[in-house]
Amino acid sequence: MYDTNQKIRHRVATKLYESDSESDVTNDNSVLPRPSLKFKKTANLGGKYNIIDCDDTASVSTLSCLSTPVSFAERKSEDPYNVIILVESTKVIIKLLYELKEQNKKILSYITSQNTVIGSNLLPDVPVELPLKNEQDINLFEQYLSKRENSSALCDYLSSVGGKDGTSLTNNILKRCLTNQLASSFSFREKGVKKPFVDLSLKSVVVGAVKKQFSGLTERENEDQIKVWLKHSPQHFKAEISDPFVIAVFCGGAKPSPLTSYLSDFIQELKHLLRNGLLFSEKTYSFRMQLDEEHHIGISPLVDLPIDLVIKFPIDYMHNG
Image 1: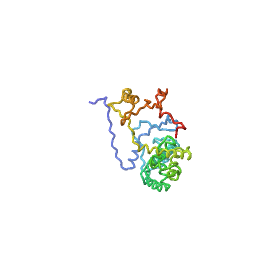
Image 2: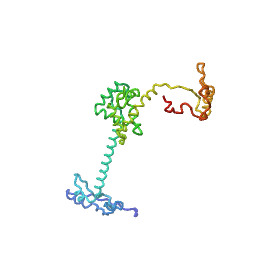
Image 3: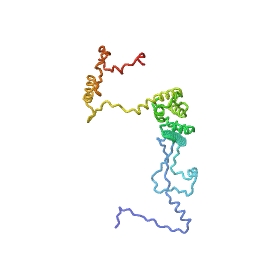
Image 4: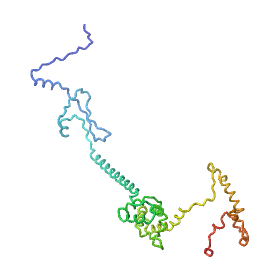
């Protein structure tokens, strides 16, 4: 017995063909129909794109494969069922490429400028050690600066040593180039036994380096700054070789807290000296004891002021002999 509810499956009979041409005719008739095409306009793209939406009812693809490359026009005419996106993007792409090109130019320019700055911060290969210490160093250095490329490289380096204004930059440059001892033997122009700094190639390098950073500074103003530094170089050298004069040394196990506790010993000692004087080599040296009877005829009301009555008062021109 057979189940009437069960569907009967029919097997397709195998066909035998007497020739290849007969087989081709049969195969052409068995191809499924192509799906219908529906064209949609995409709202997000502003109507610029036409996208083909194919029905999904077909289960067998009937698109043929091209074995040889063809042009876009041929592909469009021969194969209209491919998904075609027409984008008017040529101008957009060219604009983006132009912007990228301009950005690359800026990046290369920045990298080049950074390399220049880094290079200028490096001390050139000078023949002597800076700062210069003696006349022999000066002579070798002047020979080195006689070549334009050397003086230009040193000028770039010295302009980068730093300074908030023209004066501080000038001082920093001169301190890097000359020791105070050597600078003490120079004046800006020849004066007595001192040699003229203005005749050195170093002078032009210093002025040029300052000018690079402070273009508004005149050469005359910069020369005046050099004059002041050279004028004070003997005092700076004297301060370097002078040993400090120790008055008193106080120490503790921690930072002072409060300040009155830290200074109490010093204040007591100073009060004792002011009251009794200092005993040295069997002699007493007084401070405000007024032991000279011929000189001290009374007590000045100024002694009540917390100032020194000797060093805090300038000497007038009549007593400055």
